[in-house]
Length: 125
Image 1 (cartoon, one colour):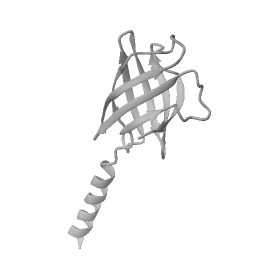
Image 2: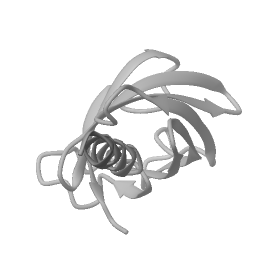
Image 3: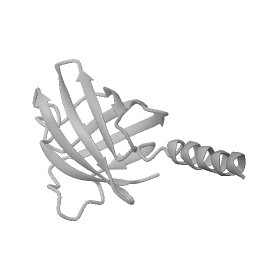
Image 4: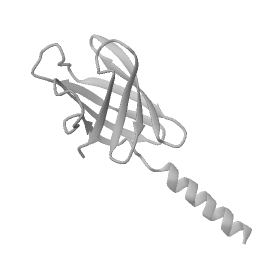
């Protein structure tokens, strides 16, 4: 009986640890309350506690447009919060992502003015 309870407990922990909440393509394109001067797109993949991917800002205004930026980072504890670093040709920035149902809250923590300070990203696919 004790072995079966322990086995079920281990299976439930391993099942919870395999959820990759940050994997996908996230964008401000469909955000209702966001500024429409630019569109921030994150294409990231989560593997256990590591995050890798790319980011890009597109806009009709040339001062907001960036080339493809490299995204690296890691996921904290229960998988609801991630710390990422964004590297571009002209600087670096760091940000924190908070995962909700089908959205990410993006909060810039420091670095160059490559990305917006705060925005909501929705999952495209």
